[in-house]
Image 1 (cartoon, one colour):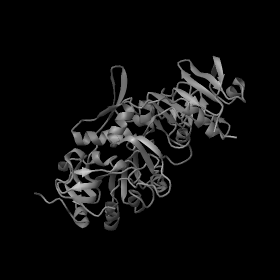
Image 2: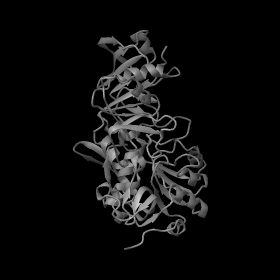
Image 3: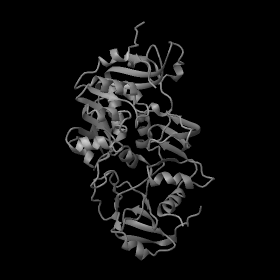
Image 4: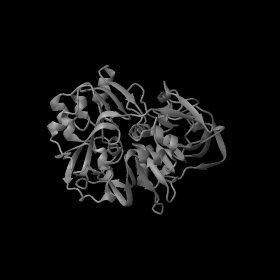
Length: 218
Length: 220
């Protein structure tokens, strides 16, 4: 069996300056904090981050914002982190805002081999600028393109050694979708168990999507 | 004496029916859950991945893994379920949410809404608002009638648009207004106002219903 368990140090070798990285979580609930801390410690910068939001200062992706490690951000909401807005206004950070449901589907499309998503969300708003539109059955849709990344950092509540993941409560959010859409997927596990200890019925992300597991997530 | 926000939330709660799947926006709309009639059982959705959301947690009751879309710790009710964000927005966009109650900066007589960019302030992002307004079967706007005297119910929205022609109903401390093909239809007014006074605080023309009623008065 392949050993997927890495130390934090070993895992971080997969992330390089300038990489596109997906980070799971919703307002830092289900964001893999150990990876955030380690990216700051290693000062890996000019990152292109795809995430729902940027948490709050000092929490979740807010740690990367405070350390000014993000160059480009694709997110649905940045309102609860004033530092993100300040960096955007100062021209230090390029932000692309995407409706939350479109963001989820664009990531899903990236992982599911789809060429894009047709959604009526954003038709007639600023969101449609520069995007292709299509009319089907007399309804207008935007064509939203798939998203993928070099690395996805996700959070798992219970992970078995094959990489199968169980997410507790609302920590699933973007984590399970992002696990499908990056070249290298690394999960921060709260608890690592032996293969077979997670009931196959309760597995939310099949282990084939997960390349590496790091323990010690809070 | 109830505040304007309490009166609006109280009236909005009367729109909910047994079994409705409901998504409440952050701020004033969240208060609606305090006034749901005891014989009405709804299923609250939180777009970060809950159906069957319960009350906010008291200090000491928090589960670090269970928050609502406003990042507050919440409980869930028996029969609740959790899911990922793609499923959550499939529920929203797919028309499986019966009612969403949201705040607004501006609404115009075609039902076009501006709610996600506060003028002169930071740009927070639309979060789930655009999808909710697009996909919910019924969109109710719960808002104060004016912004410190400046009309919010307009001929045409001037701020960045959240969704086009999607608002069905507007509930304020002064009035209940239905958005019809002909424009704003005034259906109810507060007991201490007149249709004329409501019109004076509304930019768009109000069509007054022939069955104009008095709004259900607030009760604790």
